[in-house]
Length: 269
Image 1 (tube, rainbow, N blue to C red):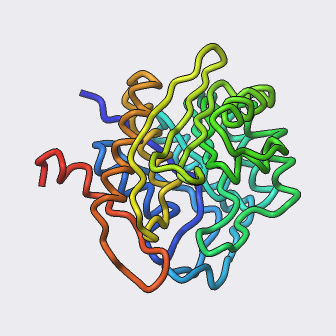
Image 2: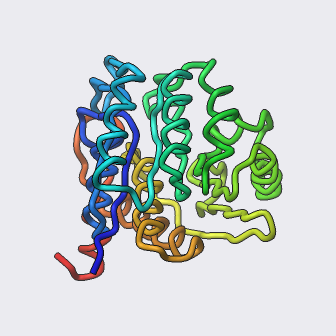
């Protein structure tokens, strides 16, 4: 039996709740072999981001090549890519290795408000990375930046999803965690033909650090296994819902989610 392999190209979170740390934990919990290419080292905790130390594009490329030339990749995700140079270099390597199962989590702003993507990098993201992605997983604020529109309603989400496909993306799931005045979080998946909705109860908690990273990592893990996109999104939704519900209550700010909650809920712990 072959082992499914997933790669995360993202930043390191010293607090362990987001970034490659969250991604690798999620890959492991879902039975996928995880690998990483680090784009930046951050000093952060539940209170915020204290410092960001970006890698050079050359350093990121070297990590990707080491994996591509030997182990191989069944699916990959990108998280914090920080600047335009790194985005362009990563896109070139994805094309070189002909990796098609690419999940883009357009990480822009940390929970504490710190910017994690330089302004000029948004243009590079649209030009180089989105056209070669299988699916993009923005939250509502990220989708607003990418589309230039305000998103308040379900119809707004649908319109934003269609606009994102116009940028060359094959599929998009706009997450509903930032929905206002709603007891439910509704994620909208659009494949260019139909909309599919994934609904969960909203959990009243401030401990949601790393939810976007974790959701996209779970999606990547399932795609690496070869399951259908709808099934992969459903598992990712259930994974992050369990992680939020089973709160770890760590730190004094926006605490991390619980990456083993999904399997504990299923009786595996």
